[in-house]
Image (cartoon, rainbow, N blue to C red; front, side, top):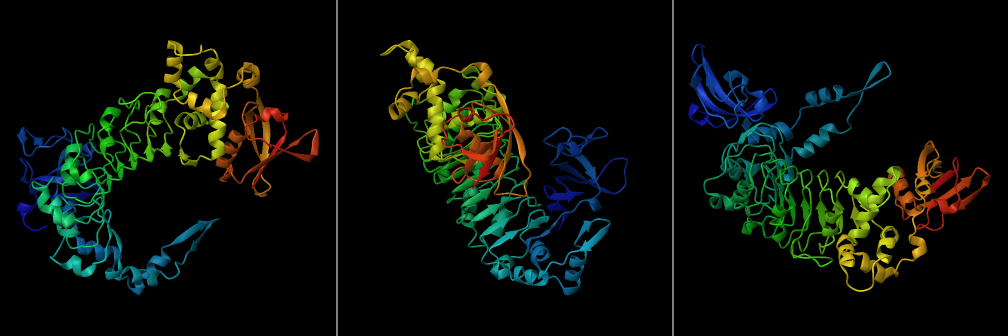
Length: 534
C-alpha cells in the first residue's frame, strides 16, 4: 500500500488474524516505527490504544489494541494479483510438485496419489474470460488494482466471493463490481467495510446484484439497511453473525426480497421479526440460533391466517429457546408455510405436560405434534412429510386429546373456548375424520404404554450391514417406526416395507400391514426380528 497517509484505517493480516491500523509512528522508550492496531478478535489485543500513560489511538473494545512491528503486518495484494495466484497457469514443474505432494497414508507406508489431468484443469480455470464464478476468499485482497484490468480479464463473472480479505471501504468494492457487468452474486463477508457516506452514489456499480452476503461484518440492522441502498435489485440477503438486535424498519430496496438470512444474531423477540413479515415477496426466513423464545401473531386468533409473511414457504427456527406449544399453534397461522426447520428447541417439557411421552420416542411424538398442529407441512426438519405421515399425525392427535374433547359440553362454554385455544385445529380434524370414539380415546395403562421391546432389525436390501438392536415401545405406530428406520437406512418411507419374524415361527414372515396400528397390535415380542425392505 503506497504512502503513509493510506495506512491509517488500512486492513492487515498477521499470523492468520485480521485487524485495522489505527496509528503509525514511534512509541516512547522504544526504537523504530510501530503500527498501533485494533484486532478484529479483541482477545488478540492487550489495551485500548494507551501505553505508558500516553493515548496513541482509540479502539472500540478495551482490549482489542496492541502495537505491531510493520514487518509483521501483511498489507495484502491487489485483486488481479490474487486472481493470478488463485487461477493463473501452473507450470509443469509446479504441477508435478503438487502431484508429488499429494499422498495417502496406509499401513506403515505412504502412497502417492496422482491427480489425473491437473494441468488440463488448471489450463481450463486459467482461461479468465470464461470464468463465471470466482472465489478469492482469504487471499488478502486490499484493492481493485489498475483501472479496467478486471473488466478486460474476467468479463463474464456472475458470482464473486471476496470474503475474509483486506478491503476497507465499499468504494473499493464498487470499483471492482462496476467492472463486472454480469455480476449478480457478491460475498463480502468477514470484511470490516466502512459504511459509505453516500450509498446512492455507488448504486450504478451494484445495479445487477441480486444476492449479497454481509456475514460477520459487525453491522447493526441500520448499517445493513444503509448498505442495501446500494442494491436496487436485491432478492437474497445474508446478514448472519452480526450485531443485529432489532429490526427498526425496512427500505424500499428490500421489497423484492425473497430470502432473508439473519442467523446467529441477538434477535430474541419475535415482535422484531414481524417487521420482516411486512416484506410482500419473502419466501424464506432463516433465524436459527438467535435466542427466540416464542412465535406470536397478534393480529389473529384461532385458525385465522395472519397478514404477516403472506408468501413465506420456508422458515428455519432451529437452535432457539422456543418452549411452548402455543408457538407451534401460531405457526399454523402462516398461509403458505410448507417447510419448517425447528430442531434443538426446548419443547419437550411442554409436550410432557399435555400427554404421556415415552423417552424412547419423545422426538417422534414431537415430530408428529408439529405435523398435526400446523397441518400443511411438506417438509419438517429436512424430512419429507408424506400424506400418510399427515394422516397418521392427525389421527394420533385426535386420539391423544379425544378424552378432553369428549368431556366438553355441547355449545359455547369457557371450557370449550380454552380447549380450542390450546388445540385450534382440533375441530377441523373432527370435520375431516369424524369425532373420536370414547373407547379408542381411553389411555392404556402406563405400564403397557411404557413397555419396551428389544427388537433385532435387519435389511435384506443391505446384506453387508450388520443387524442392529433397538428398544421400541409397544405403543409405537408402524408409521412412526418407518420414520425412525428411514433415518437409519436413508430410504423413503414411501418405498419401505416392514415385515417381522417371530422366534416362535422363524421360517415365516408377517407383514406390518397397517401403518396406523401400534406394533403391539401384531403381538411382536422381545427378540423378534424386523426386516426392512425397499
